[in-house]
Amino acid sequence: MKILLVGATGTLGRQIAKQAIEEGHDVRCIVRNPRKASFLQEWGCELTKGDLLSRKDIGYALQDIEAVVDASTSRPDDSKSIYETDWDGKLNLFNECEDQGINRIIFLSILLTEQFRNVPLMDIKFCTEKLLEKSKFNYTIFKCAAFMQGVIGQFAIPILDSQAVWMSGTPTKIAYINTQDMAKIIVASIDNQDTFKETLPLVGPKAWDSNEIIKLCEKYSKRKAKVFRVADFILKATQSAVSFFQDSLNVSDRLAFAEVTSSGKELNADMKKTFSLLNINVQDMTSLESYIKEYYDQILKR
Image 1 (cartoon, one colour):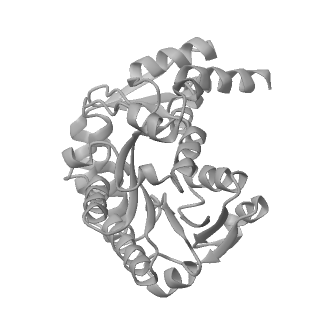
Image 2 (tube, rainbow, N blue to C red):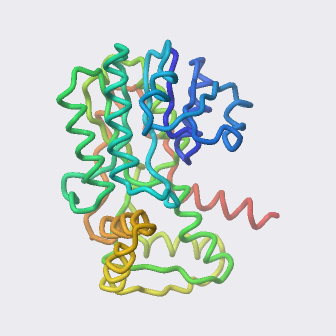
């Protein structure tokens, strides 16, 4: 199929692009800075410069497109708020799809959006889910947890370098998933009609809390972690302080997301339906333990 991929330069987006090309799809990526996205072109993707806040850019990018995969979210360094970048951008994208008769949309959301409406990113994801559910699109919504790649920066590298690992709130179990596994599942759903008008979980094989992850990192790095715990009220005070300044609004929105990851509410779900619809074997999914072990094995050899 001819696919428009939104968010192609992100951690997940680039894996979707690579997997889709390997599966034989034609992939067009709408990017704000083509120079920074040149690696996508080297893989075989077509690039078009554009911004979701411009209906004209989106209209141009959607020409001859059969399906849209939306893996985008605003970046921490964006000057505009998440509501402007993500919500207004999504409305532009979906309205333009409707005008051009494009019915197939895959949207990447987050687990438990309905329980954290006070967190801007979760609120936008929740509203987008509801917008798609009420639409005439043949949508598939994937509700995700967190990437295994994020564990490396948050835990594995600091522990290896004898740096501090910062933690806050109640240890929350999260079913981390490898973005390569995610990409295979997402791409498999593109032309699978059994996934039309479905909301499916997309998580890893097991949920881990931060204390368990630290023990894994200590085991395979053979280093002792230096853990520093930050009181919740400090994060909330910081969020309130930066929200006074226009240039810091996006930072405030990101800090608010810490409420999700330190809430104690498990970010996990039963993947049986997802595996069944897409004929995926759970044994093919990467475990967090093997992921961390492989990372340290490669680093320590060097």
